[in-house]
Length: 148
Image (cartoon, rainbow, N blue to C red):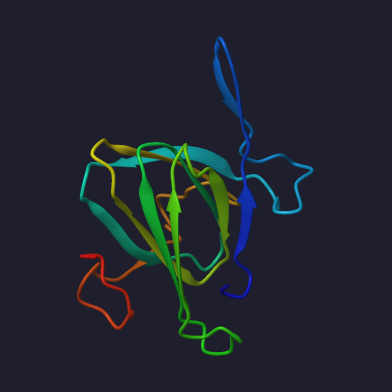
């Protein structure tokens, strides 16, 4: 596991009315602080990658469809420098992945239906000073192939 990455297995509670899944609580060991919560989606086969943040941490889960979440540690001083982590997240495999600052990350919808992703970040988005640093999904030095 990449240094600083944490995974929380989520529990889905089902009854005759539907389902409930707690994603992130302020008393979770994985919780740092609250910035904002947002939803993003990807259509089948679409890749949204790669980027990292210098100031914020992310907490990703997928609540509909299936996403393949990939992480890459490009921090030269990290004990896990160069390591890649790969997670498949869906309502059938529910988990929350905590992505620390400076870890490249991206995801691909690997289901036949749109993947709906919830991200709880530690800082609110600032459009005047966006904390996003991007590289192309395919043309880069990251040892990961989204075509698989």
